[in-house]
Image (cartoon, rainbow over all chains, first blue to last red; front, side):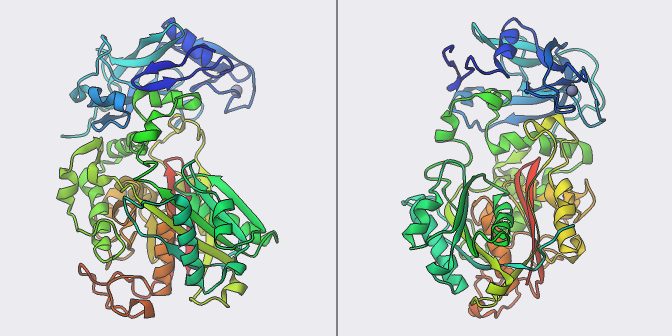
Length: 168
Length: 404
Ligand SMILES: [Zn+2]
């Protein structure tokens, strides 16, 4: 088993038998964002799960996605819980709706993923820049030979829908 | 729909002091809370033959608590869970009795939620290794309950125009209630301005939007309505219960929107269906207040107001003592102390008995002034039906309807 990866005071553990995450992170380390595609119904899903939540089929393959999406919701953490995040505060956590499979298979469902909103140099984005509706793309934060975290950064594409951030 | 309406009762309730330094074990606290509930019911250790408890690796299990009081069990389970477990275990207790496994069940939660295993996630919890599904959130500095729920709350503001000031009324109301509760950790009344003026924890949550980590143990005792008639207090009947009802994709609920929809969307038909009543029939509520927003979200999802109008509803005065349907008359988790939900059921039981432990000199005899001034009364006049809305997280919750 690869050594746990130390990141901001946390031990990130991906054992060899982690059939959900191990290959996901290997792809991420090669700077590819992948999700699982069901072999039966073709729907994409994240996070990686063993069976398809729509048709229960077990067959799947990795499918690379564009890594582009829209901020669906967010939070600005001012009081860090994990000691390793204190120096980052205030930092933004974003819930990103990816462009692939929006509103499918039902209007309320989408491929959504959590990450931090960072500048292209991987430092935290200014909190005044964080808003629902703004467009983002994936960037990768390399942590070890076998692991990179998918993160997000703002793009200059026009926003999707109403742009809104918490006043104040 | 199958219903056991009114066939089971809560006959005993008890707790330990709410503090931030219990200086004792969760075993000692659990034993004391269970003992208080047994005495409250007018029962003895021999009358208890079932036990249920919930915990998150932070408490003492039933096999150490029951024998300490001389209780021999015919049934027990230790369940992993936090908020929303109380209501679910009340339903399981009814099921165990109905199945003939036992006759009277004590349900407890004991935690040093401040001094030992901090519920807010600092300390030992923050140092836990991250693996499996946690990898989807925790590496991004999203670990505490507030951090896990904040995008739901913020999206509600975006979709419905809900404001910080509206939601702050929940804290103001609960602080008003706590000022009439001798047990409460925070008895001082606060204003909406105090809440929105307090420092940010994680947007849109200010410090005073968040509950209090607390050391405490709580217990309720469930038995059949038949046995309840022999107990000392006026029995409180269970009209309906829904336990740990989930939204789709509980693994990663963000995948299934609208994310502003909470589990009550699915639980309400179960619990109201069993009880044969609707929201208008409910006299008081215990909508879980881990955060001000959770109270608001659940009240609207269960139909006490229209979806999206929760902000206006909680800001209207209706949830305050003296209002049409007070919520968390003890001060709840925001002010009385944090117990993972059990204290809110205890409060509603006492309200329905008419013997809430406020500052009225003859409160224990059911004599109240109904004057809701600080340091005064917090008994709801003629309360007949109370409801608990238990919350674990946006996609997971429980509900309970009680009547006197
Ligand atoms: Zn499928």
